Length: 413
Image (cartoon, rainbow, N blue to C red; front, top):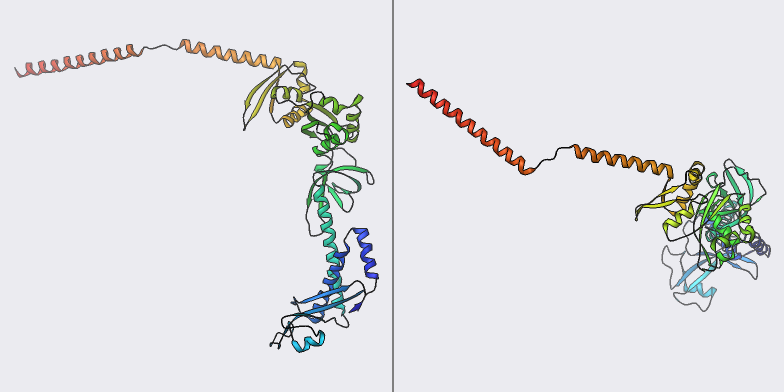
């Protein structure tokens, strides 16, 4: 046995406090390292019956070989079997087929063996850290957490989120946002990827679920399931539309989200760096839902063109002065309304619809005129004319034959 004293246990307790690695994992790692060092020292790759045992009371560790007690050792089985006579010297109470642990701790481990032990301990500590981070952030996947911006590497922002650093790719960042190292930031855990080293945590500052989490934090009615968020569509840094619905007819879903004098919505807008937020009242009636989703534009009418599993399409008519507002800058308003409702929305102004209707009317009238100019035929009359023509042709043929016969008779005479 090797005397290691209490320093090892103190180091294990210190690592447990700093990195959160359990003491049992560290002790198990040390035992495995001792076994690896023994195999290196004895130059044996396979030794399933070798194990290391640590006595916490005495502070000693040793390598032991487990052998089966037999009457006489078979040839080539010296590493796995021990004779009954030799086993009696170790323990007088042993019997045939019992197992006996024999200490085989080398008096001195070589440099190579010590290096092997160090590698095993280091690897096990890394694996334990990796599993701790993986388990922690797998549970936090799909949630909002607070981190501190560490640095900016190229187009990626590195955010410290506790025991690990997370990566925020450029596509998950808000356009035009300046990320200053040291600032606190709320991010959404998008994914956790397993790697050979520490797990890679991907976070987002532009995800639509951030808006959901902020509303759940600021609006008690949402947390109490009185008000429900039905859908969210977001273009980070510019505008967000959120559809809400109340389970209680006495609670106004939109008013609850806005809060007294707009206090709740203002807090969320400030958190999102003054991003515009449209709170839309959800409705099971698609016409009403589409009208609400296109706010702040006024709508004249909504015609459902298709409503099935494969296609949901609607034609929306707005006043002429509301067309640009309904479409939005670069089509943003109608695009967000489409994402929010799931309906394909085609928007036209009143004058455009009137022009289209007039054009359709002219085409219809032209087709009617063409049909009237086309001659109409009676099938019975056509058949009668064909029959008369055929009869006349037959008579003409008979006259020709008769003339030929008469001419032939005159020539013979």
